Image (cartoon, rainbow, N blue to C red; front, top):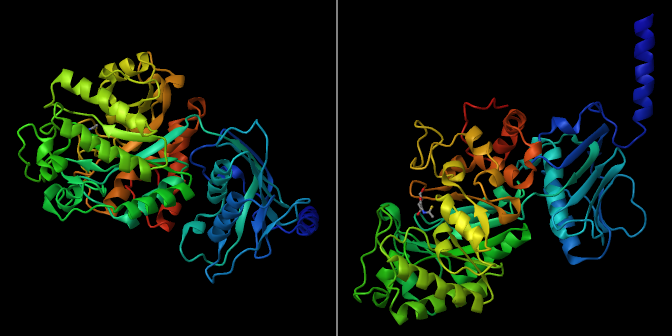
Length: 520
Ligand code: TNX
């Protein structure tokens, strides 16, 4: 009797609930069941779910070009296997039932990348003060959907999103990955895939290491030999390659559509053999060097007391600035082991002026801290805390890329097939468990622009290799850059990353199945 009564009343309840458009059997699903990475600042789960159906309307709150393109982006994300799309419209009045409203509001309280996401059984409201915030809110929405949202052919299923409210913005303004396209060259499709993968985790910088001893990878129209000679090989002697300026712009725009800024790097005065092989006058003895396909470092230097060198730097910096809308131009500056210290300092000082004459801020590896830095220059810490401290004392800000924690070219452990190990073995837990603002005594949160995870490619030959080194470490770095340290902890993260495996598979990512994690 009791049971019958219970069944009856449950059926009655179900019936009432089913009057709402989003009602399904899955009403117990909670926001916490869909593992979010990076973990948002605040998540308040509520009862119920919203289900995206064919009738769900995507609405934007005004006729605004950015807003409409974000609406289209969401629309294409939700496009079903048969090509059917949700309607997109501009909604100036009240929020419609069964809609996902993206609104751009004028409200100073919204930080640049902040968003508020409200999911109720009736609809979803995503609000931000800037388009970037909406983009990040959409990434969160993406992770609140079932993992199948990531597959190319989306099956017929319930597209449910658990109800609740998320308020979110990042700790650091600069959240990057670096890809070395010099040691091994990667074409446009690979770079675009990397951009897509990091955008999903709310990174906003892709630093491209465009030149090194083994190859010059960006067309400089006034210096054609950089590519006709300098791009022709790579580590191990493959054919190398380079981006034309048009292709580079394509990368820049593709990234910008995903709120990612490209930071272009050309190495000087060291790591410059490809340039030295292309233009003999850059060598102090006036003799062109042979192309190089090994992996030693520290043997090459531009001749710092020849005027030809500065004419060369001027040409490169001018053209690179013209095709790079971002604020930074990275000039390398690391491991110039065959440059005298005084020459090195004088060289960096001159280059810094050239860079700022072209309207850019100079970024460089930590060794540039020895020069007379402008306060707007940015120093990338990788190895020596003293250099990073020197930079901060000179008023520059720091990007944190400590090799022993964040170099994605380091092996996970001694048995993993790809990568080097000079800095450390970096397993997923070690990669995750550190705080940039507590790494170096004397360098605090306000001194730090952000973090960047480099992938050097001496041992990385193809896209599968990139994926294996980047996943699953990169999502953890993205969380370090986004989520306040007080909210992060390994035991919790470990669960979330394990549950994301279904997404990795749906995206076709060749990830490293770390034994530290229980993979779903
Ligand atoms: C050090 S990190 C380098 C790179 C190498 C890398 C390999 C840095 C600024 N220089 O040239 O590719 O180690 O891990």
